[in-house]
Image 1 (tube, helix red, strand yellow):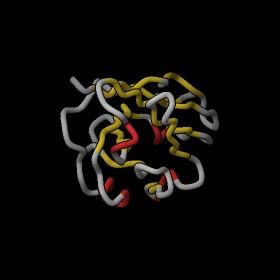
Image 2: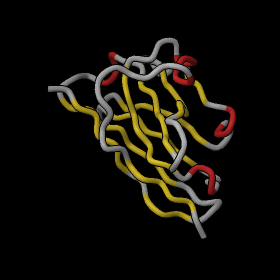
Image 3: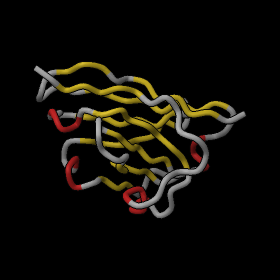
Image 4: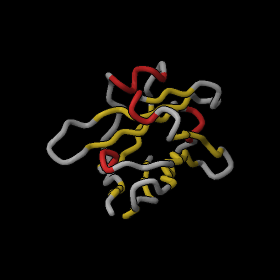
Amino acid sequence: QWQLVESGGGLVQPGGSLRLSCAASGFALDRFTIGWYRQAPGKEREGVSCISTSGEFTYYTDSVKGRFTISRDTAKNTVYLQMNSLKAEDTAIYYCGPGITPVEDVSTKEPFGTWGQGTQVTVSS
């Protein structure tokens, strides 16, 4: 049974960094585009970033451009989201999900399958 597990969240001060991981089991992650989503308290879930199967194409929502970087490691069957210069408004539960094509559609479409537990990111002084 295929599964995606998010990890790497935590409490960080404004301006700090975190690297989130989206690890796959039961399937090869490089067969799918992978998107990162987040849901802040009281807000709808939003698509943050997405990476193509080859890694050639990426997408970032405007609020994270220049601060977040998405990447994939085929050998580890994992997709990462490096988050730098974190702001309080980045506080949310972060989720990953497969199958968004093209990568820009992460802002309007949800991935297939069910959501995992996500990983909590809290940016606070």
